Length: 255
Ligand code: 6PG
Figure 1 (tube, rainbow, N blue to C red):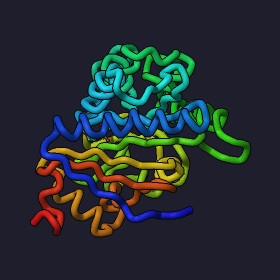
Figure 2: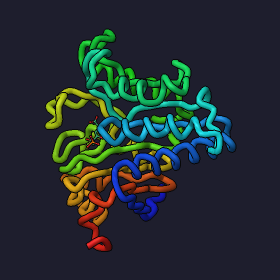
Figure 3: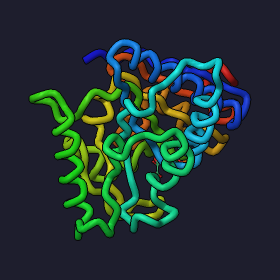
Figure 4: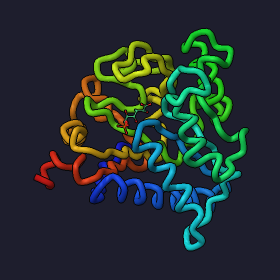
């Protein structure tokens, strides 16, 4: 597997960043559909993840843009909070409101990680079910299907998805697993692991704010992924760090 040098893109602020990522995502999904007829995206939660999806819905409505057939987009998640389906903490809920319901992605293509009230007593059961969904959509012998773009946020201490620094998740080689005792609430989650994330064609880290600047700089300088999980993710074809000026503030070139 290749490990290409990351691209770094810096936008003036969070609003411009969300817009630029949305335009790039629409173009990337349209290009994938032009080649294969379908496209797939892995969504993230967090403030920037949702802001990007709101912008995608706006961009998708513009007639001058490349056209994405939203009935032929597979939607997966990088992580999810193990809370009831109607909780505002659900990444799925935010994504549906911001984009999926607006553009009409068919229910069978929206592969949400289970909430806590869907019949899975423990998050481990929910993770095992999701592993089956991923494997069922994958080529024979693979754990996960093709992901054209996998979106990630970055925590100020360097977490990605729900892989937190120095937690068991950093050494877990399964494609998807339960995560307990997360320092960022809510504490119980389901997350893709490094093996699944790093199987994506393109991994895009979308990061805004000066509180993230040290983690961004350390990740790009090659920090230990055990201590800074954001340093351990990459796409097989491209790894893109999409930053606002504040998040880029500790990079050598910006200093
Ligand atoms: C989650 C996210 C998480 C998030 C980062 C950044 O479920 O909480 O998937 O990994 O992307 O914490 O979040 P912000 O953009 O809100 O800072």
